[in-house]
Image (cartoon, rainbow over the protein chains, first blue to last red):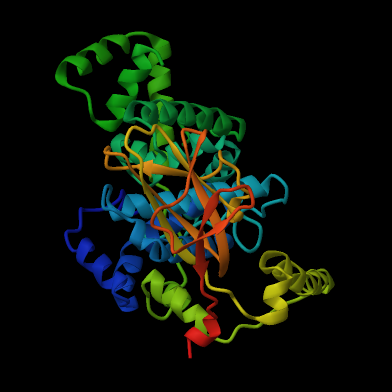
Length: 200
Length: 221
């Protein structure tokens, strides 16, 4: 289970770090990369479904954010702004993926499922969990992007509707509707995969 | 989105107030609503249980290695680009375009500057001469002479004082010019303050102004 979700606490030191970056201190940027790399990488992976490319795209998002720091006016949190850059990059990739076939999953073509951190998990439970997550991965990939992004941000990244709305440039109410519709579609897709409500 | 769906979303997010929670509970009396709630709850739990993928340990180092050395002000970037040696990439089309530009440049230059400038390199100085005439009661005064083909409707003097003192300035190249004033388009008047006069052959005397020959190259020396 993930231990830290959402955009995280409001870091008061970020304006100072950004000022240091703007003054040419690249090492200062490492603090922000360390702080948000897991969030950005996971977000990108859930959106594009390709673990190998997700890491590249996440790194590109960090580099683009650094190069655009002058344009960050602090009207939103840095993490919101950063995630928006990453999401836009994902949408570019997904648009292009309509023309080229995006290899889903990890390097072996299978959905990348993290190893369990629960040492007490039995092999049977691990297998079952992997099957669930692989089914979920396939179902997510079939959701239209506008619903997928709402579901991923709300349920996997754990953001509230205000954050989801800010990130997607829509009202919190619209974020709520998209989340509901997306989850409804996802449920039907999982049913088609053979998962009943009581099984998941 | 129905009212039930709205309440369901609020319930899952833990955002319902006590009154809304009671309303939601009442709606759960319907079997279909209970099934919908269970389905959404289990899907949400499944989504929330997804683990995060591990990242490569060098992720941060790779990002930092991709950043430019030092952020510079935009003006500094432009300034640097003026002095840093650049590699020009070319192809046949760009080479042809450059050849055309180089071939056309002397022609364009000649068209703008005129042949005398090219042949001599001398630029005859132009002197601005101010002409004035006191003509109280006149409505308009024009200046006519060798310099404008004696056309009475081309060069007009202005009465800026409101007391009949008409004046105007004209740039003239070196030479000797005869001129006259024409009041209200009909009355020809000789400039009483002219440096000299000459007979026009019809019994009248034209005023004369002489602009001395000067040379900019000499002026500069």
